[in-house]
Length: 278
Image 1 (tube, helix red, strand yellow):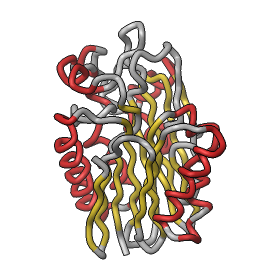
Image 2 (cartoon, one colour):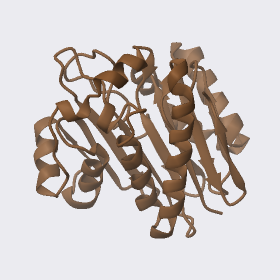
Image 3 (cartoon, one colour):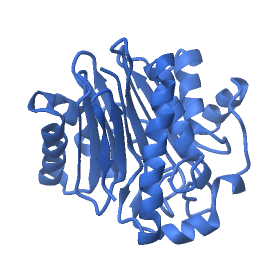
Image 4 (spheres, helix red, strand yellow):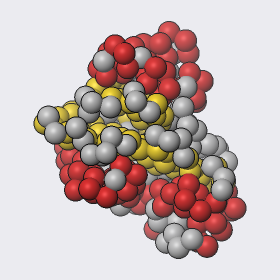
């Protein structure tokens, strides 16, 4: 069994954005599906690169600026053998997920931040851009201020390998230096080899406090749909909070749960395709 599952963020999407968001996550699934022959890691990164280029999502090209008007982005990629690359408070690169991948492949570290992350990314061929290129004023006006950060994907390839990848432009009008859950393995995304994986989206502060992704994977014995819903219920019980989670097990079965207004998500597996959430 092979599969791709994608989420596009969580919150209360303006009506004008909902159809575009659903089309975007479905198209992202198709991009990942076509890339699966190269392996789970390559497929996961290709999905997030696509979403970072789509102005309907809060990552890369259409990120939320902080109160100073500066875009600071976070990204993470992880494989089922626990290789990990993450970046936070990253400025002026077109694809933060490429920077996270460079950390995984070339740094000998797992997590780089700020100017050091940008310098490392540029040294390894990640494409630079200006701050203005990362902010679509017209698109931000359509969004309003009630959509939370993070796009993410899970990939399962024909060899049974899994990878997760996530990227975020952050929350609207955040404090400079604010980092959410995205670069934190176990919070935004996690994989347990032989079991499955989860990716999360929503209010990062809530997600971090309960390690939502690892919590969802731990419940996979209940099945993916039940695992997603149980993880969200536990978060609400423990800290309140708003979030969504998409889960895939090693058999390619997919489930999702969220307590936000919307969470556009989609999946394609050998068994079929589906999703919704907006």
